[in-house]
Length: 306
Image 1 (cartoon, rainbow, N blue to C red):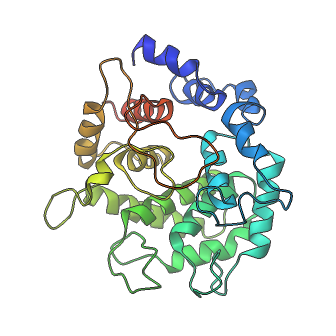
Image 2: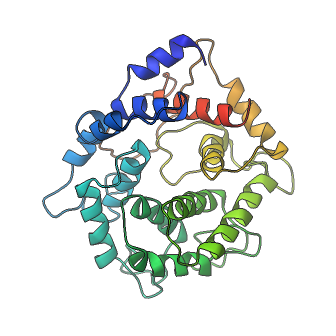
């Protein structure tokens, strides 16, 4: 990490500064964290909440400005768990959106819940203090969707998919990591086992390679995005493994090498194009140096000794 890159990050949004202190400098600055709700991107997202307690038109519409994706973004900013607005919105979602199978289901026409959506929701609901009893049916649903290859696929209960998806699997890993970190005990051993097989699924694919051909499954997996939303890329995958406490594995080497190559001469990383759709916050233009991509890349490389 160059001094110039560090100074640049420490001059950015308060949420970036907080995570730089926490993840790169080893100091959890509680005052900086408190300010995430009061200024910058965190305050802007909180201010976009409607009078009905939701963001957008409710739980899942429109895509990136809905309560679902806004709560995920607020969690990823590091917003303190006790912040009132996301706790209230989470309670609304839990009260209004559970389907017959126990999962959260924003669709009124599809009977089956989506395990990718539920993995993301478990992530932010756990972070923002939902009670174990309210999360239990979501946990039950997620575990019911575990596939024989160790991972998860949102299409397994709707179109009969037989192979796990990296998109869905990383979303579930993130949700299980947060749920277990927050001390929930309900089916914790089974969730830890599901997380371990999901991690193995990603590593077996070297995060982005086909098991059959060894080639990249999708060129988009090698591009770096922020926010990732539901999409997988190597940056999100490696950061999810780091956050889950997964030790270095030689099967990470290809993804880490690609990530290291993407570093610019000034020690920073650029963003790829943002995913289409309206957002609360203006995206960083593709090709521009991106503080979040840089921060996440640095903490991943630091964690894995690269």
